[in-house]
Image (cartoon, rainbow, N blue to C red; front, side, top):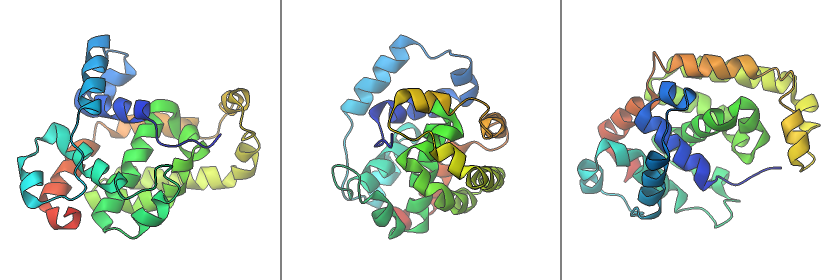
Length: 208
C-alpha cells in the first residue's frame, strides 16, 4: 500500500503549520479553515526557478510551500524519481523535503504511516535534515524511531499486502506508538516551521 504524496497530507501539514500542533490534536481545525487552505493550495503559484527576490517577497505562511513546490517540480509525475532527485540537491533542500514528509505523515497517521508509505525511504535523510535546521531533539527522536522500525521491520512489512484492512491492523500494539506522542511533545520545544523558515531565509543560496 505504498502511496504517493497526497494533497490531503500537504493541506494537513499546512494547517498544522499555521495553527500549531496543539490545535490539530484538539481537533480545532474548522471546515472554513480547511476550505480556505484547499483554495489557497489549488490557486498557488509554483516557481520552477527560485530567486532571492521571490524568497524575500514571500511571507512566512507561504515560503515553505514555495520551496517545497520548487523541489517537487523536478520530479516525474508519479514521483518515482523523488529520492534520486532530492539526494542530488543541497543539504537545505534535502532537509526541507525530508522533514516535510516526516511531519506530514506523523501528524496524519503516525510514524507507522510514515514507514508504511513511500515517504519512509527518507528516514535516514531526515535525521540530517533535522540537524541542519537545528531541530536536534527531533533528530534524536528520528534516530530512535528508525532503530525501533528496523528492529521490527520484518513484522511490520508483513502487513503490507496492499489492503486497507492490513494497514489498519498494523496499528495494533505497534512498537512505534510512543514515538508519535514524543513527536508531538517536542513541538513545545522546537517549532519546525519557524526553524525551516529561518534556515531558508538565512541560507537562500541553497534554494536558488
